[in-house]
Image (tube, rainbow, N blue to C red):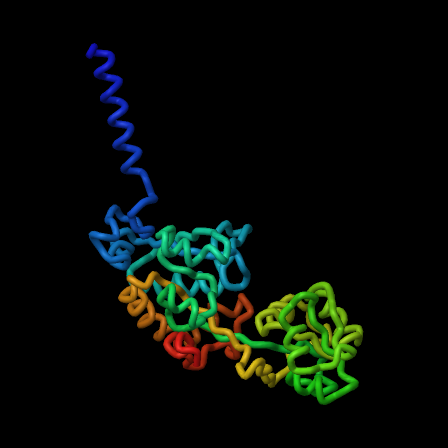
Length: 303
């Protein structure tokens, strides 16, 4: 082997070593810090690195990219930042993925926590370890100020043949109305939420049915004097014997149960405090969306 060939071989080997050292895939934990998952727990690795990766699906108000601030934000992300900082992890990196790819991405260690407001369901509980929920959300009605037809539930619409219920085309609320047996003639279909809001203002519908967070978001973007309000109180419909309220939480790998438990311990100290309420208010969350003591264990068992 000539001297030139020897140098070329040495250079190639050096580049190979550098490439191997810079590889962020494979078996290394998404938390970083140079320790593999086999050498340290995810929590220990994240603390050592001072940062962790979260997976999100770009869905407001839970987790999304704020283009103006050039950072990931939302209810789920901002709560995670507070809780993780209390655990000694100061930096959160967002990894964008489709919602349907969140659990596979977690399993593949592309990130270590799903922070996307994911509903806790028995089937998902078989794949991931959930924290306790940070919110519970059901349905809501947007009505004219004073709620002139006294509509506080789907059943109230059913009982009043003169009441018109607005829904968005393709939305689940249309199915709810059908299953509660509201006559089709009492249902007004709009192309989108903004059109539904205008329809209530114009009197084409007496109430617009949507998730509570959708109604909160609309009210937050509506100027004073709009003549609209959120129906209060409101009773969620019971469909097929079950309430439609959903509860969102963080998801961890099943072998990171200790991490999930430690996260849960800090989360319990935060949810429901004034600091928590102030943090999530800009995203449309109110005291009505607090989980009210519902736990992941209850939801996983189908309660």
